[in-house]
Image (tube, rainbow, N blue to C red; front, side, top):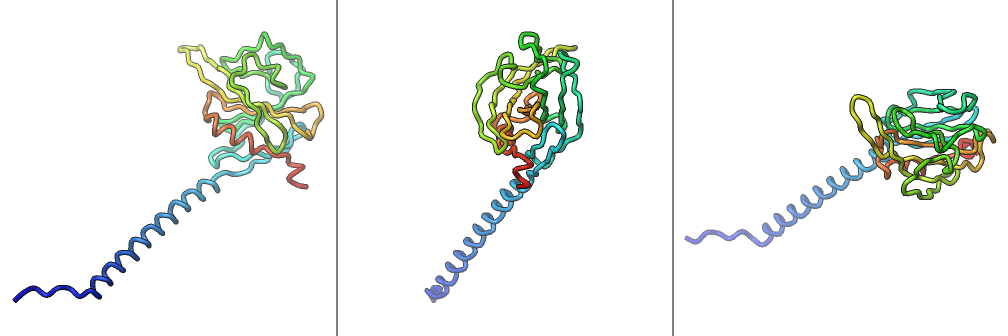
Length: 206
């Protein structure tokens, strides 16, 4: 006796089940991908910096937060130079110095803990690959600087830096703000994204 062939109807049902199963798997994969992407996007958070001299907001990854504030960071030049510095761990620094600070470009040493005292791009000894970036707080000049340390051993890094000219500074004596990723902890792409997020708190509050 010859084997009985499966009916066409049964074959169609099996094919349909396989097709539906495959579609569900693809849908689940898509949802997982979207979930990961949306979760990544939501991991960024806005951090307000609302002080006497600087009033801005910046969006940074969730693992970054202000852990130190220096009201009068040492500049190594003008002892009367007014400044403020906000540190986000070892990854990101945001600082500002008064326009009347006395800073000599020729004597700026970008090494051994000194990363430069900048008000404008004119203060930067050797900016590399300068580009203009728009932010909600004002135009930024983003560049790279070479930073070195010479202690027991010598090492060097390319640090992304941005000088933002504020459209509406909260203190007219502090018309710019500087962002820097110390020792290049952030890539230039990551850093530029953070710079572009800079916003004026007064603008945000409307």
